[in-house]
Length: 113
Image (cartoon, rainbow, N blue to C red; front, side, top):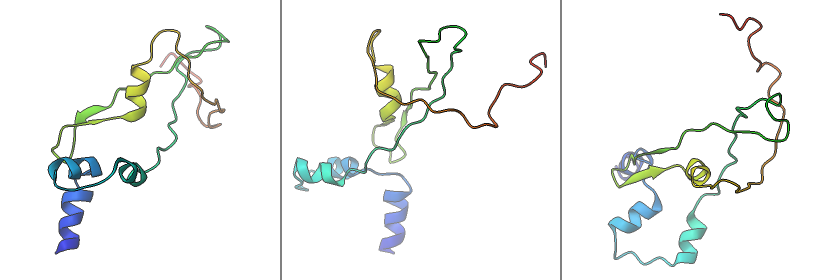
């Protein structure tokens, strides 16, 4: 029963440790311990949405900003990478790597369709 409740209330609703701490103010956890509990961020991959014909020295990315009600019912779920990118200002620079796309990923032969 405890495992089922945990799966429903914590895993199923993607309840974060921060959600648990905010709902249980008597829980004592140091900031260092909290940081150790956080999962590492994963790499984010985006597609370049500009053409080298337009500018061979500059690329643009198109992305959606992830901000939605949290499945846990506590506040909002905010995407880390998309919100970081959306808060950049003109002239800000980021470090990234560019890799060739999958060989099967290409524009259609007939663009008139």
